[in-house]
Length: 106
Image (cartoon, rainbow, N blue to C red):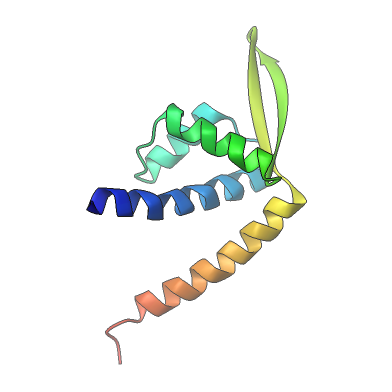
């Protein structure tokens, strides 16, 4: 039960990570999996790729395809809508961080 609750919570964090990195430079799935892993998120490609596709469908990410060593690699960048969502998410995350960080002080 607890794992499911944490997983739902962390999926929101993963979306923010994706938007953040895709706003800095084009990202691709394997790179994003490794980046998330470096932050302690151990998700599979079977979880990440549907998230990327849904974010593209929602207009948050834009996909381009490039031929890399004979294989088609899909790169994602944040759209204007995605940047607006990221800006709002940053504001909300910062407010939450301040609230929970200061809990117990005073």
